[in-house]
Image (cartoon, rainbow, N blue to C red; front, side):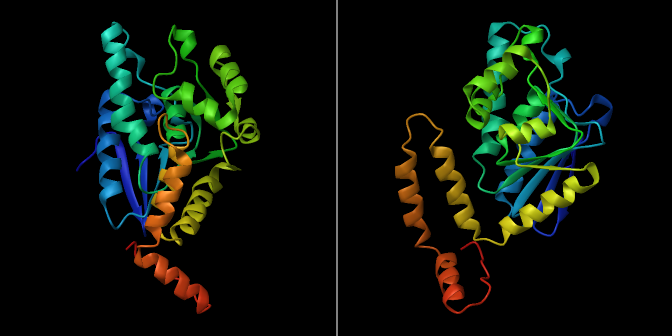
Length: 260
């Protein structure tokens, strides 16, 4: 598929999804969200893709928010549908993906942009990045999972402070709060994300998918995370990767996982 708002680049088993609306600070409009749904759906199904790095074009912004002009005149029904569709087609799709997704936050990550980063499995940030959820300054609240994922990541009190004040935080503060795991200088951000993802991709692919499902289960209402862990653990014993991992360990050699 030819994308108008995204750049797709493949490097070995890593796929880059780059939001390419630099003149708009990579704001999320309807078309971009549709393209993100397609790009991630295809990446999760593509056996040649082991993991994904998502970032924004240019040095200023990862995603500086949603395109407000598109929903300025929505009513209650329109706003509800906007959030519902965003959750199911993009944000939850990423969070529940079967392959690791790293957000490389290269600049402003505000509103829907921070929510997009929080839907990813791991977040890394440039030293110049700024993050926040400013929706209350528009008379709104975060609608793409921000109220839930931010509290899960940094705790209820700090999440409420960020949401209710609409204040931005720096990359260093985000790391201190647990919102991002690594901070790098701008030129080192993508190499650092690649290095981390390459390490992850040296592990068993089916086990990676099981680990993501098990961790997510603990944050999903109505699902027993411990039981999910037990079931996923058991499933791993039926994979060829498990047999390869054990043989490699006992034979003191590097495992060659096939995702089978």
